[in-house]
Image (cartoon, rainbow, N blue to C red; front, side, top):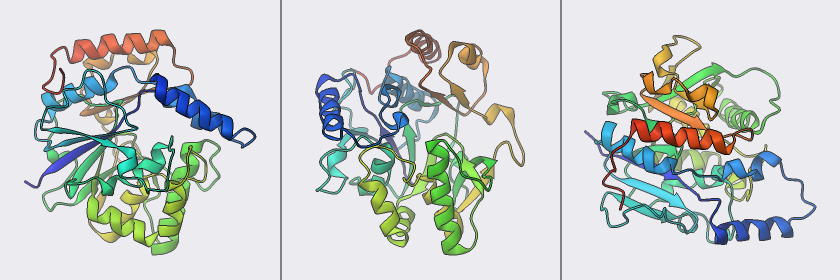
Length: 307
């Protein structure tokens, strides 16, 4: 079996130095129109989700070869940095050298292929994503080595008002214009599989457009969502789509839960292979505390990645 690495993006928005840097940059941008969605605290809050996500790796996906955590010169206080299976990557080491500040995960995602020693086949996750039950590599790569790209609902021929929808549409239209066809579906909000070589090819194919996202300091509706890699891989022939709700929907695989108490009450019973607990602008401290209680029940044992 080919090696499969796992990449996370992580930031602690409560870190004083980081928060001071963000506030300073925003002050200098005074007068520049920025979406609340791009600078809102919920975009950068962490509640130790990464710790539990790594516990989920150890419990349900021990076949992961190596783990890379991309951060902005931060290290989780509980992380065992001496563990030889995990590596901290400072975002400045993969972003272009002339980028001084970046608070945009979309921008960082355009540079994942720059991670030194990253395997050809790899997975990418946000820190709020968990392997919720036992899972095998064939959930992400088929027997021929093709990437399995997970989608869940059709893209409609209209302008989406929310930022995420606009970013997906930007990616879809680029691939459609280039190839004359494109998978007309939204990606599932989940742990995604990629081929490093395909990302490099995609970046060359859409160099001008992707470069604009790389240099976008904060999220914007003009950014290109990373699903462009999935669309590109499918057109290139090294990936195939898998549909959740739209073509054949298996409830146990729909692992997306808003971070609200009333949404999380029954998740311990679910058989999702992967679960995403998504923080939002309406999430409260009480919601986050409840989530930690749930995660502690699900993953009570410390992993090898903790001190």
